[in-house]
Amino acid sequence: MTSGRQRRRVVPDYMAAARLTVPEHISVERTTLVYVAPDAAAHGLDPPGSHLLVLLGHGPLSVYECAAHLGLPYYVVRLLVAGLVGGGTLLTRDPPATDLPDIEILELVLNGLRAL
Image (cartoon, rainbow, N blue to C red; front, top):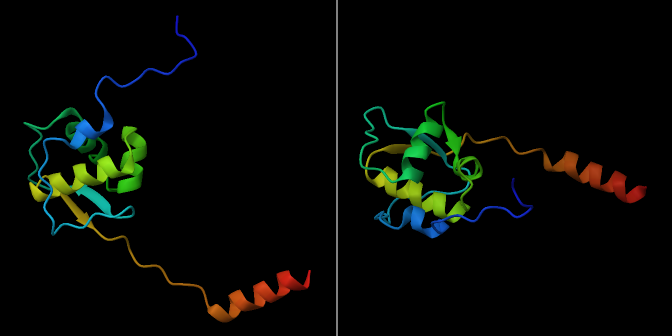
């Protein structure tokens, strides 16, 4: 029987990235796409790192999506990804650029809304 209270984690969230050395030259943002390197080895990884590899085995995800699936805060997954990229286990790429809407159309819509 379970109570209405949620189970607390045994290990605090920040410990998921505690043993990683994070290189300063690697930039990982919220929308950075993450995928597994072709020659990635899963041995020697902490549980969050191995869970991330299993999750990314189905295809690339953004850092935010990884955080949501793993149930960890964004900043922890960001450090985790940066550390694994530094070790050659993961690869990253920026998301594809999207075309911004025409400013004239946005101004027409705004003017129309103000007229209501």
